[in-house]
Image 1: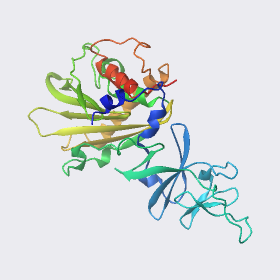
Image 2 (image 1 turned 90 degrees about the vertical axis):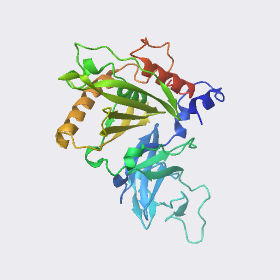
Image 3 (image 1 turned 135 degrees about the vertical axis):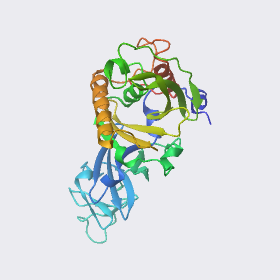
Image 4 (image 1 turned 30 degrees about the vertical axis):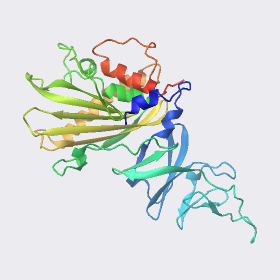
Length: 334
């Protein structure tokens, strides 16, 4: 199914961010959901995640009784206990115990927590607060390839930035010479390669040629960018004629329109001449440089109306396509 074409023919309402509720987002590492309630905000919705008998549950973070966040409570006998009056909630959201009720008095049918869909995959907890349009996004085949080493290169963090702004930045190569000189780009050679966009299921992709290293600019590698709507990006890198491959997987979760939690998976099937610590430090430096720029962009929310900012044919081709496809999904920040 072609995501874009299907949506173009069905969307009639004014653009908004409501459609974002119908996608899966990683909100936490599985290891973060243990013996205590975990508080998180997804698309401005307060959530509490908790684990009972190995099962992950996600509630709207509010007790229906007196509006107390359930994340202030605790887990007892496989149920979530509200800290204010001790109401206990089962994993299905139903209240099973109100300690202040006299014996024999029934619990009101309205005494329920609002439950959201939650699953675990790739060592992350994914939540959808609406009705899922698709399954949790699939990682590329190399994620399951035993020759790839992934573990040392996982990272996560939070930016005070719009998730779409982050994805657009990660997919943009024309800023390399100016934001990452000496690491990813060269200000003496800022020209950008032409790209050909290819539609794929759920998004689009394109390739560029990049120097293998700055000392030998004639030796190039292929770099493929795969954009999966709304906020997932793969960057796959390889040198033609070599079996060596490197893949980055970026997942951006919109806590609000101006705050994002991200997760990055990186794997490769070869041993780099640089140690893992040095490679991770390099990535952290690049991300820190990007963070300064993206957090300072105005408006904070990515404009999906192409008339709102100036675009250049060539260098801005991926950004134009990304914004156009978000608009076709009827996504626009007000």
